Length: 457
Image (cartoon, rainbow, N blue to C red; front, side, top):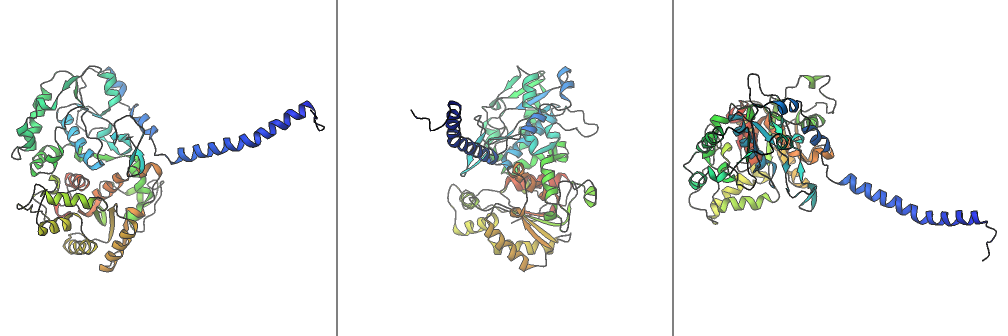
């Protein structure tokens, strides 16, 4: 075979060059594709998960025999953060009231072990470490001075120090009367569980995962849940509820949205006016609006057909905005008049929103100067709402969730940022059927804010 002047070594180099011309672009292409998909997958919050396993009090608790724990393995999952949070609040309250360490777990959308889940055509993390959302006593922070209750620990730590816990079944305490009889106050259920857990000597107690919640979701939608307030209002679970550094960083990054003319930076708080900001104080002049859109419209129709009431913590008797549940509907059907009333209170139009905002501004004891709209509404609809609100009054600023500048990690916990801001607003107008609203209202009441600073559509 003719060599065309190439030596054997030259021939080998020639063929190697040809191979590289075809293979190298493919390698680079696949690396770019891999990097593209890796960069665009939801975050896994590995750093947060790692820190959860190295909390400062773990070494001490490993050697102490007097620390007691309560692990509610039946905690809520596969639901929105509002529903999961209200369940965590009650589990945390039960642990604290029995003198036990609260065992915390992830905010879990999908418990099947997967890293990611599909939600309306988009990937989301299947599990998010609770410390990416919360800070403070619920995730191992210091208890208030004088409170000797053991600090919270992670599920992983609990499994390490409690390999053979006493297992409890919810049905051993909750009978059908306690579950379904609306005349049975939530405080009665709570007290029965206090008796049960306080009767157990074992420091390690677990409520098994294949159980209903102690307080099932429909109880949160009934006034009988308000009886728990006597236990909750002075508990550090509500009075010392905290948000994570990730949420605080998102607030600092977007501070100008919540505080007009403020500087926004992740370095804020080191110098300047932000250093004096107390995260437990109201933001002067801020009116927060919780406006649900999208598929919540169908949910509002469902609520109307079943004559559903507001969430319990939206029904404090001190509130001026109340909801008189119609008695001539339910069980899947209602009148057109009732449905119109439900839609106005649950899924108000832009005109109805503007009317309510105008009313609340006039009635507010504190001057309201700017608005933040917490919403999942489409961008064009939100812009239309902002323009309508702007035309209705002389507002210094009107911003919404759509104006936020957030990182990739913050994107999947941004509902906690909204709650942090709403918790500190001068006045909140919320949705009476929303667990997000009711959780915020509960925290505001625990902080001692004026009852009439909590308003509803």
